Image (cartoon, rainbow, N blue to C red):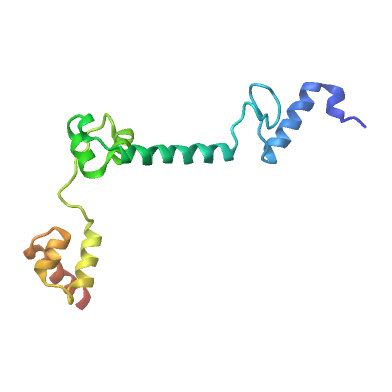
Length: 150
């Protein structure tokens, strides 16, 4: 028994077949017109292999670190981080102006750190750990105490 859509139009039948295949997770090759064409389509396994090989190449590049081949700030970053990390930074941020603020940690993290370590560490040790002055650490600690008492 032939499918009714095939009798009406072969093209319509193929479109319906393709739609069902896509809905079931099938793939359609644009070049050959076949479902799951092994010559023109990349499978998830191929992508995993490609990513694995890419990571292996990046590891080899990291071993052959040569900061002298980079210009300007990239040379300094290569000396600190290595070639692999510099390439990632360059791919992600090239052409952009990036500034690094003095404050590394968020205010919420700083408050939580001071609250959690106030009894264990001195104000100067906390100040060094979070990059603030001792005076500012004491101010934040007094603010925390005021909030807790009210």
